Image (tube, rainbow, N blue to C red; front, side, top):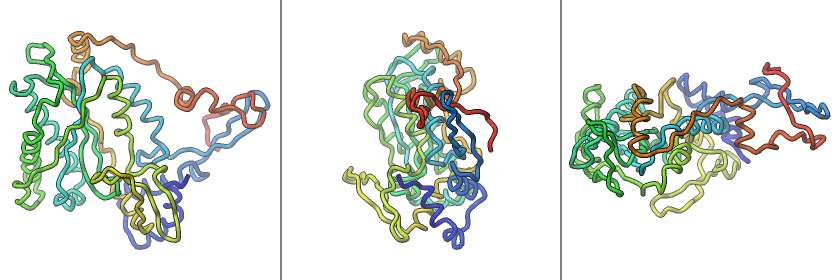
Length: 357
């Protein structure tokens, strides 16, 4: 498989001669370059039967690295399962017009934070209206900044419970189809976000007040058990996964992308420097939380609210999963024989020591 790392290692130094990176971008760049190489050290796995030794290089664990997301995703899914309710769930996406790309790129941390604020307030305020629901739902939001062709395209994915908790502590179920018209969502979101931008002193074209912004709702999930696995793919996705890179030829990179205008998968070829530039657009500010929870899933008193909502929705209580080791988690993800000794075919490889070489 051709990897993002291959592109960075082959063309990265030339890219850096003509492009400047912020400190957090430079850190992500070097982490991806060095992931699972001798630069980050290594550990020895030894067969418990024949003594065969295998050296494995350490991962960078950077959240922008395509190779380092499987275990964090699995840990996140395991944690979120305990908050699932026996109710429907909706997937709503809020997108910004491309005219805002320039001010957002210049002020990423502030602008992304304002996106979350505008999205959460839009949903919570409209859900509180008895015309739509008259209750507080559970909302999980995830920021993405890319389109399929790797261009800058900030949008927020939301998973919203099909119902919510009323002020008198009762559960009110929503209609089966999404209960807020998308035009109402779009216009309220537009007004809120532009107001917040102006408050923050960020300039934009006033014509944006008049255009329709894109908010859409995908078909509801068939059952709650599908929600977290589906969302897990969004929470830990990076701008481009390694399996989408098809070819490196001369100084060009070809990758697969889905053109949503006709919903077909196509190939796109760009200069390697342009590929790297686009990928680096999506490195988030240091410490920025790209996953946030609101409503009945907000952090304060969450356990109390979820316990009540589980009773009201007749949700079977799930005991919290006990802590498991990384090795056990890999067995769960990759299969019980992922560490089978390649030498004797009988024993299993075990790490001798947590220390790096």
